[in-house]
Amino acid sequence: MQKGDHELLLTSTITWLLLLALTLVTYAAAQLGVEGKWLILGVLAIALIKGKLIIDRFMGLRWVGSFWRPMLDLYLFTVGGLIATAFLLP
Image (cartoon, rainbow, N blue to C red; front, side, top):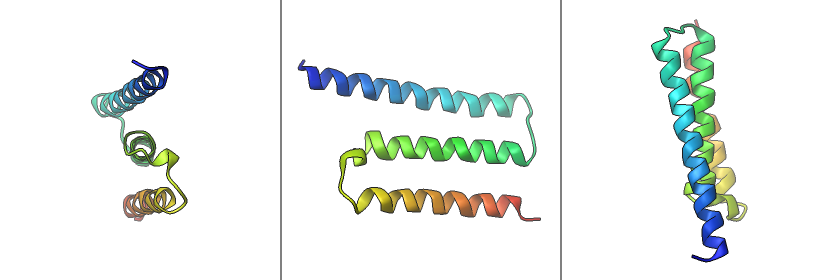
């Protein structure tokens, strides 16, 4: 295994562990019976962070040019914003 391969494997493993930890946080919030708009915003924020990690690391768009990465970021945050708006409107 070359040095670059080892760094990529380590980064991917750390990212995967972070995704797993964020998933456990949302699971724990549900199991503890947390409710309300702050739960919705917190879970949505975690989902957006996880989406950003997947886009950057596992889809490989962290090192891509100026079209695809901003386009997927825009999509991710637009959908997240629309979902937040739908839940927070009376």
